[in-house]
Amino acid sequence: MQFTPREKRRAKVAVLMAVNAVPLVGVLALDWSLVALLAVYWVELGACLVGAAVKALFAEGRPTYDANGFSWLVFGALSEKRGRVGLPVLPLSIQVANLPAILMALAIGSVGWVLFGAIGVGGVGETTGATLTDAESLSVGLGVLAVVVGRAVDVGRYLLGGTYASVPPQQPLQSALVSMAGTGSALLIGGGFVIAGAPPPFVLAFVLAVKLLADIVDVYRDRLEAYDERTSVDLGFAPDTPEWERIESSRDGAEVVRPKPSAVVVGGVVRGLRSPLALLLVTGLTLVGLLSTATTDGVAVELLGGAVIVAGVFTALGVFDRSFRYLAMEYRVCDGASGDGRLVGYDRLFGPQWRLAPESRTELKRVRSATDRLFGSETLRLERDDRVYRLPHLPPDAVEAGGRSAVAGGPASA
Image (cartoon, rainbow, N blue to C red):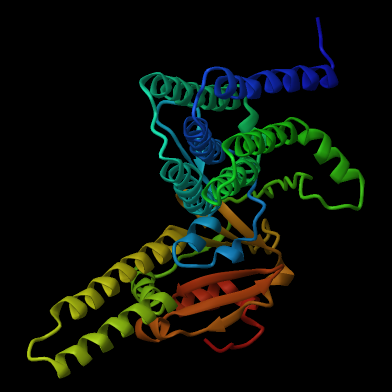
């Protein structure tokens, strides 16, 4: 027997109503404490975030965020890299460009999760002085186990069903953050009510109502997406699933230009030390250390040593950033009788990254940074379609031979 989407939604809503009624019955009939209920909900939020991160990790859809928004150190290198890393045993792979969104979601979600737990659970427990009995501890343990198993089953269905093949990484992350915002706000506000002296039954009803509402919204998310797509009202539910551009590239008949490896590494050192955060921390620690040395008998070894450590960390990050971006890159100039004049940026580890049409090549500008002057290299740069294309630290003869009309636009400032 086949069920219609409407019947499936109704059945799911009925199940959710029954599931959300269980805590209410437990508190009213079995004398569970409010702290026990909030503790289970709090763990559910954490499990929801971790499950969404796993889903996003294996999502194969193209990320919908603007890579320029992640132009920070290391994050930018990951977000702009097109390619996947296969797992040795499972038929799954990790898309490199998914990592920045996952890391940001985990950072934001973790802060919210800790805040919700501290106020919603810890604040209520401290205010009411309630402690879990042995029976409640067992119930909470079973509830936590059920939450973790439920999230694991959900992730398993997502992977085994192949849903990840057409889903961008933002979709599960946004769903998890919306759910955390709904239920977490209920915990936060409910905890505030208890701390302010509100009666526990009122807080209980408030938390259960908001939790149920968040679950219902998740069930009807597909209807909200459809409504968002066919109307001019932007609710933020309409999925944006751009596809990766197909790039074909071959070395046959193409001139290949590669950056100088030593210049890439040294450029990474400069990139790391020139990071605004690195400059702020190193300068601040150094100035405070020198001031402490001048006003006291001893030398502020801790502060000056801290400045050296910070500089070393950012140097390592800068080297990774530039090496991951450019060390395995080669630029294929497809001129000649069999070529169409395009320029393809090809990563020898992850495959083709981008391509420029012949007319775009003519807009490339020469840039000479301090690293280029040190190593006698040149860099080509182009801003096009809200993206910056860089061909860094190329040998001058390779630029002249391989670029030809690509540098016709003339010099540009570094």
